[in-house]
Length: 127
Image (tube, rainbow, N blue to C red; front, top):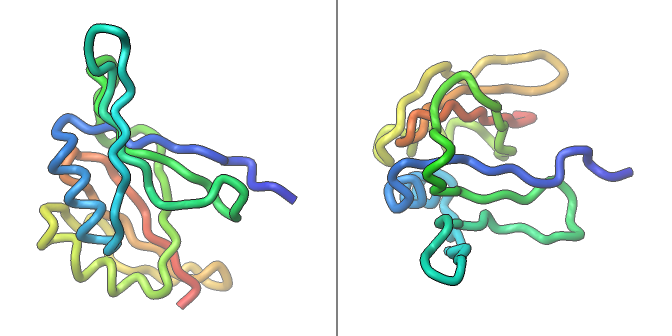
């Protein structure tokens, strides 16, 4: 069975600041891949690590002048082993904790944070 969601994009206004935030909170490197037209860079793109044929979905941070980040859009939950580890790095990385860790029963735990661009993202773990 395949996951229905296979790609996501998180929009940014300050691409480098957003890239640093996600790298610092999740302790991972993002691969910068600018998308270019013949005359100029069309959008800045930083790919989250993943495998096309692996489980879960892949995605990227994107700087595109036509789309603005912010609350009220799509909410993406990042899988974590234990939410407290990532939450402990959010504020230092320039983000805000919007909802601390909450027990959601058999589905585990969730928390909501705000990234440096104003996007609300979720964290989810079984523990």
